[in-house]
Image (cartoon, rainbow, N blue to C red; front, side, top):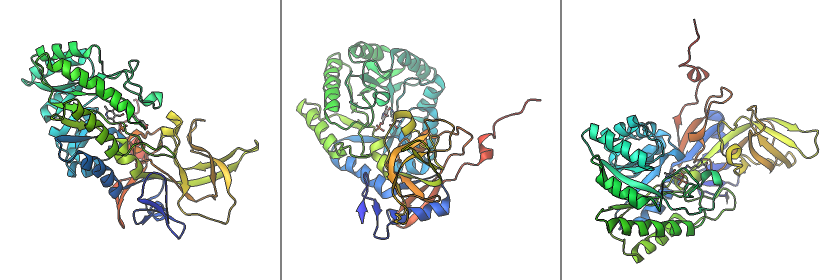
Length: 427
Ligand SMILES: Cc1ncc(COP(=O)(O)O)c(C=O)c1O
Ligand SMILES: N[C@@H](CCCC[NH3+])C(=O)O
């Protein structure tokens, strides 16, 4: 038995087959078809309890950043465990409610909240708006007044800290569109405190995603705490510190800190500066679900190229199912669901059927494969299905949740008719 990168719940057993918990992945592929996302409930729960145990004894709220994986059964799991949610749209709020989540544990982030979304969130009674600009603050005050309410607000501060991650997923540098610069934030807090529709309740910061070091978090925390002290010196009380999400996972050989190591380092610094009485909010996404998911795909054709050394393994999943490789050149491990010794090992570019040269899932992968084999793309639980599209009129994949020997279909495969159901011919 051997464990693969990322999750102790994913194992290659003595029979040469890959199991998620006690479910053989080649069997799930046969039963449900491919492409197929498979998630492990135990892996998600284990990731959550790593955060929860590190925060035990503290006033805290974990707000799962649901953009990472917003499937209802995933949200249901976190809601039942008592989590809140970090949302970025009215649609995400509706999903939280549909999954049984508590709106009073929801924080609403995002640079472009519309007045309609603000109203919807106020009516639902969200815990806090993480406001990202002065213009948004003024709009939110107006919307709240019109509803005869006051909107609970944190300012999302941009601390200008390098999270040392891919430029597309860095959010805390001064050139990024996110948050209010830490130099301007004190003035904006004063303005917020003067607005009739706003009630200042906290401070928020989120510096990026797939972060593999603790130091950028501590650098950001120092700036946030400097600001908290300056704001409170003006008589404006900040109840909670929301330190965002962003903790990375292992895709191949990355070694990010474990959630408990990150939380311990943050709490130590918070206590050392005399802020230990504040409630801590965190917004982890990827680190709760990323390693708890795989994408299964069947090999359609093997196409050894005439060009020296280029061999294509054409599979039935594509960039529309899993966008990370095409979008960020992200490395995702790819392994066969059942090992075979009857074909030679070759170096393959694993590509999808979509009509784009950028439609690849893995380059130069050493695999022994034949047509009809099922491959597993690992660590696909975050930013996989939630970023899937219908490009090339491809229906989105089905999803299965496993726990022990049980497996539940949590999302049916989309049908072609679903894709143009709302379209109209003219005349
Ligand atoms: C505001 C906000 N909070 C939390 C997250 C979660 O990030 P991650 O999935 O990297 O933990 C994101 C995404 O980067 C985000 O934009
Ligand atoms: N979609 C990105 C993460 C974006 C984080 C959202 N702020 C990824 O797959 O890595």
